[in-house]
Length: 295
Image (cartoon, rainbow, N blue to C red; front, side):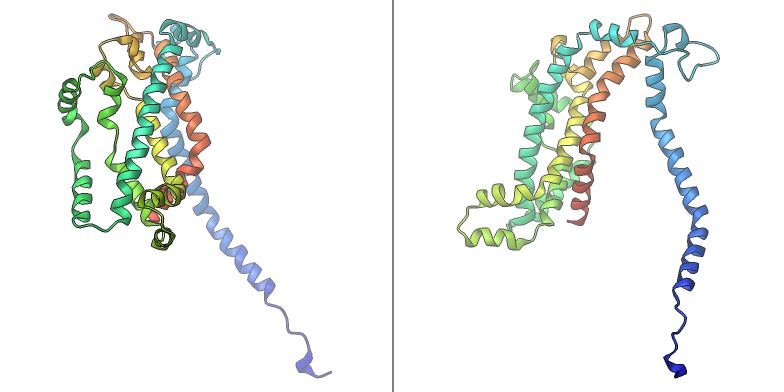
């Protein structure tokens, strides 16, 4: 047989050995990375886990020395008592009304403002966008008095609309949606024009369905913002029965003492809807953020 016809040894084992060596070298780095992520997760979740532990403790265990990190036995009395003490269903209803109204206004106004800034050509477009973005550096607390005077002038004090109106549109949401719209090819808008569609129809039927991940991000962020709204409702509302849930938790603070078990249980109940919503929408949240960055 011709020696040139003999089968040459394959380089596959050599490549596999190289892959194994590189993998073994990466194990310490990967292990260190995972350990750091675990420590960071524990650091971030530590306050919440401690709050959960306090909510399950009897009152005497909260002030025990040395401090008890974990409850000696699980007790749900704090949840039962705080639920009936501040009428959770009523305040949850108030919060849902405020949150729903705020979500609708923010989504509609952000979409309708971001679209022309991203796709329509008009004089001064860049200047308008620059002015809008520059307002993000102004602390929200400095506008508190102005917002109050404006709401008072419109006779919207002690109303849910008065709570929502000052934050009905967010510059960050406009920026996010503008970046998302910019990631859509202009050919889609041009094809709509060729078919004779109006600008509103192009926006509503072509563009808006393509930015659903961005809408999901806005909805999640605003849901968390309105659900956790605390200071502004107290300033605007004169009737405590109209408080949202976060503001109503102030009822748990006594004049001379604090029931930390009740406070912890009430706080856990108030943040539980946010955790549930985020767990079910985190995929859309990540898609929306990545789409805005690409845009």
